[in-house]
Amino acid sequence: MNEPVWKNFLERTNSFIRFLLVGIVNTAVGLSIMLFLMNVFGLSYWVSTFFGNGTGAVTSFLLNRNFTFRSNIDWRRGAARFFCVILICYSAAYSLGQAIAESMEGSVRLSIQQNVAVLIGTVLYTGLNYMGQKYFVFKKNMLKPIQEGRN
Image (cartoon, rainbow, N blue to C red; front, side, top):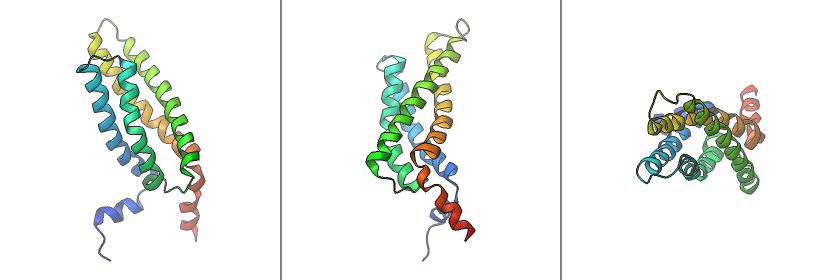
């Protein structure tokens, strides 16, 4: 009866706000892992970003399926689509992030350049990933809240 204010707020927010909230958690975890692997263990840009994103991917799928998009899509079908979108977004965003950062060559040290590439890639990845999740992975249930609102 007396539900917490935050729960009521989250129920009324649109999917993009919920996606961003889930993304904050995933980004904090993934970005921390990326930077840790790259700067502490000296792993390469690609290995670090791959493991950082991979770590957040499983949590992201579960939270986006159940919380963000409230989808009842079969988890096997949804997971297959989800990971396809993740891989496409990862490849596109971090390749572009690296290309943009490499254009700064000479003006910044290589270690800073790689960190800038990670940050640029993360921003691009977030936007591309939302579009893929909303319109491809969990699209089945996106019309339901809109239709309910019209009744």
